[in-house]
Length: 132
Image (cartoon, rainbow, N blue to C red):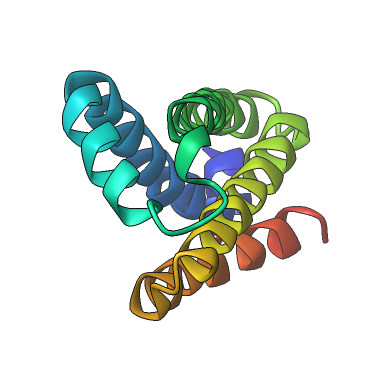
């Protein structure tokens, strides 16, 4: 129980990121065709228009990897206080969100980019907290 209280902020941020990325990854798996069609239209006027299936696969992979690292990070913070997987999860979350932000900016979806920025603030704060 001491580890939970010592790492309560990191654990809470990891839970937030876990919900965010696991839900997003599952949605991409369950509704691959719908996501693909929407993104093809979203990026049709950009240089990324023809790369959407590849880029969607990359984002799906890193989202699921981030979710897995969040689970492992929570587990290891609670059991032995080890921050390795938590740090990795927070970094992957930041990296994923930067990739998504780049895509939104290229598509000139500035409102979407602003939304991603809110998630990024949580993730970068988590990375800061876990590396103190």
